[in-house]
Image (cartoon, helix red, strand yellow):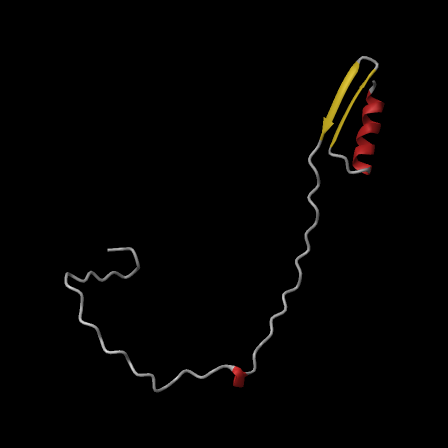
Amino acid sequence: MNIEDIKTIMKLMAEYQLTEFSVEAEGSNISIKREAAAPAQIAAPVVMQQLPAAAVPAPAAAVEAAPAAAPAPGVVVESPLVGTF
């Protein structure tokens, strides 16, 4: 197998989008592998629908606050972020 045969094999691999090729001929063994080309991904357009202003419920103005429960026994540690002390 000469260099021209190998070039022909590589051209055919590209033409037919092959990722692996192996052949044994005339006492020679050749194996060619290449990475597969990633298929092009096209993002679908996102359609967002706006609700009419009248359909959005208004917050209830006269919501009664629940009676405050008695504080739990112990020391209250206030932190600016959850999980920090």
